[in-house]
Image 1 (cartoon, rainbow, N blue to C red):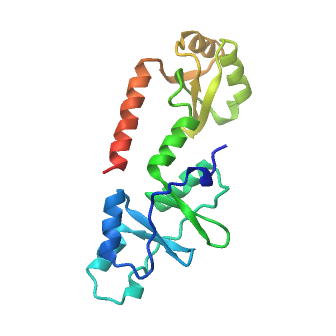
Image 2: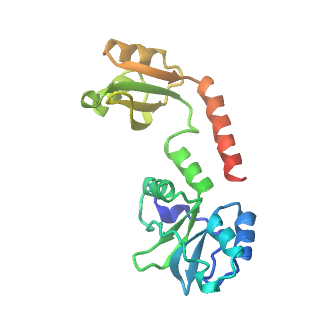
Image 3: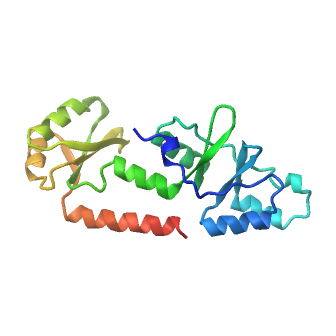
Length: 220
């Protein structure tokens, strides 16, 4: 199981409440992030954003007011990687602070490391194929889906369920068998609607390109 404390980056610096906003912006630029944690005496105060620092750098207000718009989003060290992802999306953070229940600052997780671990967890780098099924939510049974896959000498490496159109759901399966023909035929015999499928090397090259594009974006 991947939890927050296992993916902390030791490289991300922290800011003091009295930090010069220009210096804060320089650090954000150096580490290619749009947020940095503000920490005082080991206690997490909040996340400073690039937008707030740019506004503060143009203001003549007192230094103590420069961090008035801190973001309070954080995760605890024991939280699952999906909770880290949820916080990153909810607070639109480029680095996610890890803080214990007494507000002691432990470290930060970068989006790059988060994406890499999620990729590993979803089996993105493993050999196999991807099948997308569409069905009514009441018809979904992971046990039955797994049985169909396993009867074709394959295993489910990862699965996710997403809302689809008109009250339907999409079930995304990463399976260990790169040749999906037999599995697709079995799903068809059991009446499953196959929305899409991706076989090697078809999906592998596309996934690699998308991953490289995301890494380039995160490093802008």
